[in-house]
Image (cartoon, rainbow, N blue to C red; front, side, top):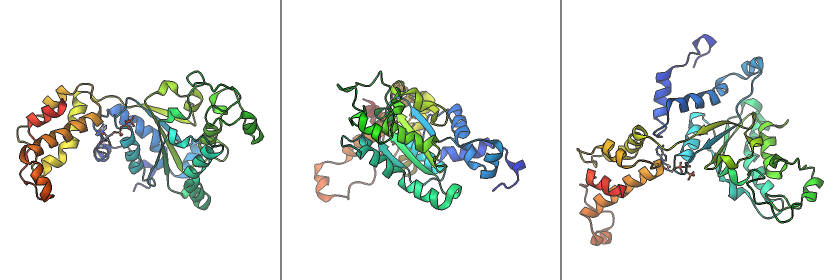
Length: 313
Ligand code: ATP
């Protein structure tokens, strides 16, 4: 570890090694630079943060098309930051039509982080909470289908006068609402915890209320794009690494050529191509009779260029 501030010089090679362990292909240098800036404050001692008058980033938003590795990335960020096992929930899962249930869901989600924070304060470890389909819980008013009675809360259908009795106010933006209010209180309210990081994911950033994207909230926005040619090669390499390592990949396989055939494919779809290629290779050597002697199939299997090409279709 570096104890003197003089040794805090960033080392791109070191970063490169750590990032290549993430098993995510096609992410740009800018992308990693952005991640570094978002998280680096967590490497500072508490005292230094106070001296500089800065706070940790509490929320980041990963947005981009489906299957581009956002969930994978969120989990890997957890590893990068040495957090507890991330809690991954989907926006729609949090919503519940029964009064109070959605709020209870949110409370349960933060319980562990809260208890640890109460016990250890700023010394406690990071808790990562990942919201898939964040747009489901915090759509802009315009985008949301307003319930027939404008007096019902849009997210839980509770009559808003009930909310008012509980002290929740309706401010005219979506952030007046119960679930979102609760989330924001955990992020930048007076009792906000320092040991949490929220990662929101969405395919529809345009649907998310601006109020959630302000500083102190989901303030870092990172776009995860479909991979380009070089990115697709990286992703193919990641998903054929085991095959290569164990001698199941044909010697003449040209991943560049497969990448060229998979324009506009997402990482998840590229992974699918490799899986499908494996199934072609296996079914060449095996038939249904092998299913009767499960687990004793032929050892010599080769995934060829032709298998990968068929996998693309
Ligand atoms: P969605 O928006 O549909 O939830 P997502 O962006 O969260 O999609 P993931 O669920 O992370 O996508 O992707 C599914 C799987 O596809 C990953 O677990 C991984 O195996 C593979 N994958 C996707 N993108 C990449 C990538 N860039 N590098 C390596 N593998 C990838």
